[in-house]
Image 1 (cartoon, rainbow, N blue to C red):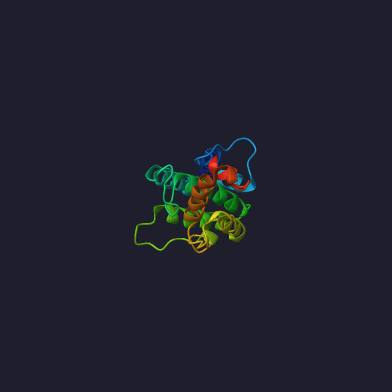
Image 2 (tube, one colour; image 1 turned 60 degrees about the vertical axis):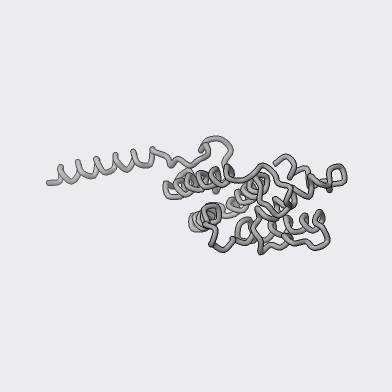
Length: 184
């Protein structure tokens, strides 16, 4: 009887080792200089799955947007790309907190896959208050007198797309921060 239990424990142990040897597969490489958040995602299958789902949603949303637009209130690829980079920085503030990381992924994926009748996710909720405040501040610097999208309650994509459009319009007269919008 003891030999059977021992054999079972050995098999289960080896299966456990095999399971931990099969690292999670997020959309990014799990080698090199990773942030604590990225290391946590790489070591957790459910977080890796959330990352893969978000990446698919991001690629689909990116493909559906125009490169640029004459209308400064249209969302564009630049707006989505800059917002995604800001979201990654915001996600990385979670450190190794798996609940925080999962929530960040769920909010962002929900935002990227939302239907036309779904309420927009405020920029504050997407990238955090500090990054949202920076986008809004930059918006007021390049916007026309009415400042329509310059509000952190709007989506980051709307604010950033507006900023990119206005920066391009201003050309050589654009503030220095516009360089980040013209080449995201």
